[in-house]
Amino acid sequence: MESFFSVAAVAAAGGVATALQAHFMGLLDRAGGTLESVFITYFSGGLVIGAAFLLLRGGSLLPAAGAPWYAYGSGLLGLAIVGTLSYSTPRLGLVAAFTIFVTAQFVMGALLDHFGWLGASVKPLSLLRLGGLFLVLGGLWLIVRG
Image (tube, rainbow, N blue to C red; front, side):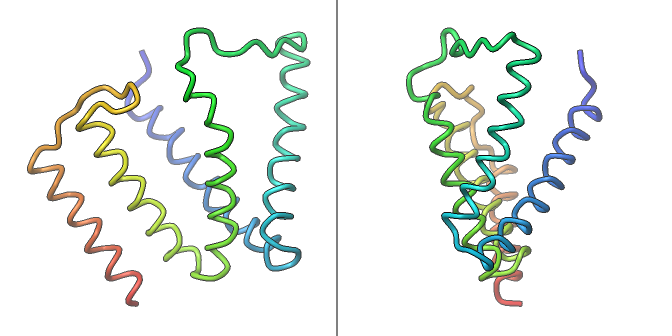
């Protein structure tokens, strides 16, 4: 079983990569446009993951067995994520864009957890978690106003 700290380190590395990616996409957006930025991001990532499939899986692109039909929309959501970050970071700045982005993630995550929507494990929204969400919303207000 993985330790909390090793998993948290992976999550933190993903956060750092996301901030860098958003900044780079913002630079591409300013230089060429949002669609171009999204295309370059997905094309380069597609090349790398395609090569990994060829090398590690012998070219097999079998779909995930047993996944619900809506899970296959993750690529479309990825386009929305990359597109919204590409568009918003050069216009709002990294901190404001990410604070809005992450706050929306927390709110949606809390709803998914609380109601168990789309196959999520039910984790009821306690008063403590609700208080945490209000603190995040307060932080968003302070950052956007600053």
